[in-house]
Length: 208
Ligand SMILES: [Zn+2]
Ligand SMILES: [Zn+2]
Image (cartoon, rainbow, N blue to C red):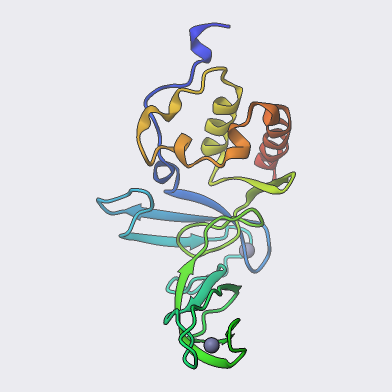
């Protein structure tokens, strides 16, 4: 094995792959693209961006001010309105709502609370683009996890990462891609499975 198989140490963070994200078109379920122009601050996700959706199959447009992905909501006031007990509750919803009904574990009283919400990009069940929350085109289950990539360049990077014997790419700092990688990708024992899954995703290059 030559030195060429080492990972290029100039690290890439996830944002560097996120200017062109392949997604599943919510209308025709074929490949669509989200193009993004980043602002200055792009770690870990750009907080200023202009993103555009384009489907070259059905040409329909989406509401670009809307989040299509799952949202996690939890009561904003984390204490029960009756007994003051701590509320431990959060749930995943498909549409934003500003109230959540929660039953207190302590006094069993139910009450509606204002919500605190967060957007979910990727979990072990699904992966979405960071701009509109659309399902990624390149995602595949590997055991209980989801392997995903924003585009084919990103997939190639993951392949090189997993193929390489040396796992020193993590030197890029807190937000390097290697650091963000879920553990199942880093585990040596999963290498075969992951390369197989990547191989299946690579075939999608032919499906436009
Ligand atoms: Zn479409
Ligand atoms: Zn209570």
